Image 1 (cartoon, rainbow, N blue to C red):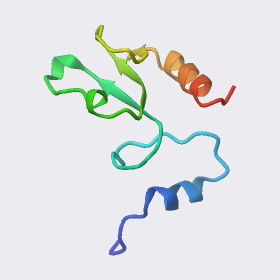
Image 2: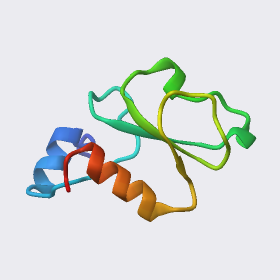
Image 3: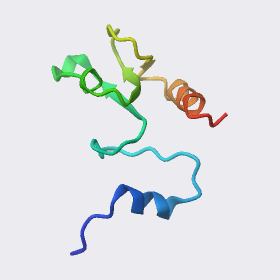
Image 4: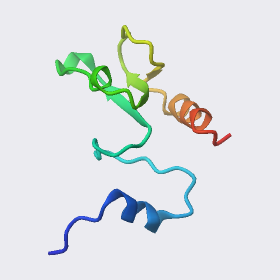
Length: 88
């Protein structure tokens, strides 16, 4: 309990040989990202300030060049991620 939190690389090494790992947080890590964005919450989107996003998962139409995936369709999101990351 008193040890520092492991790095993302350390945690991923423990999960090896996984094909895909979804993580939350690690905003400074250089990894492909998706944003779950709900405009009704009134917070600014992260994707507007960061070019590392692959897509936005949302419950409302957005004015963006990024693919917008339906929030309530996890199978669609999974298919997009597998295709975008070359996982078949």
